[in-house]
Length: 302
Ligand code: DGY
Image 1: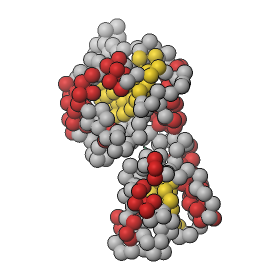
Image 2: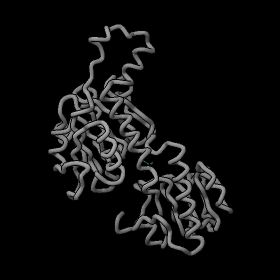
Image 3: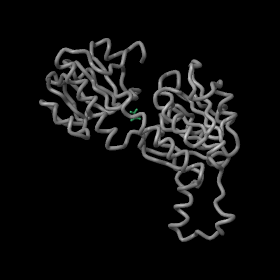
Image 4: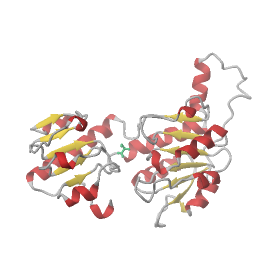
């Protein structure tokens, strides 16, 4: 099977693809009937230019930029990389929780500018993690990994999602209740038509004064303009790994002391990225052999 990969994905598994060319999708201008397999990183797939396509292996758990229904209608299998990035993403969420709650980046900037100044007894007071309430929006695989980490930090965990589940990882709350109660809110729902702007201006207004709002899921789940307004007002603190229209970041955030910004690093560990490549390649090879893919995205779930 001739495979087009939009980049050389990390790790040794990539070399197991025999017949592969590395090429950005945007560079395809005329139909390419020779291409049967595609590896992308949550990118729009130009189905009209790929008439022989059999499989799209998405190097990402999120597939919000891939038209799953259109692929299904054409008989194209789509796969993603669930499971292998839960720990890495949960670690990053926790890094942002710690950094925002304990003012780590603010302190770092001050030290570098030679503005340490305030005496250690009075300066840079923050709020402790232990005893605080962490509100997890979406207790799926990644949200659950965050909840498990929260135990070690002695946080009280509450969660909101479409359906209450039988779990000892946290107590269920309606979303509005969770937002009003939590000291720290961390977003872990996938982006879908139902979750676009799930956290809108009204819901952001429910957050407690001083709350930390952490997003490692997708920027579009939050009304970004309303979030920026809350952060600029200084009423809440933010740890943001994802944005609407990445890689652009709202300019108003860049100088705010109460915000920690990272460039969509959730899955960016060597181990996880290599495991994502392994899974994407295994999905392509399975389809090539005529086997079922390991981690298909089913149109009914899209
Ligand atoms: C994912 O896998 O969805 C990560 O956010 C990378 O896009």
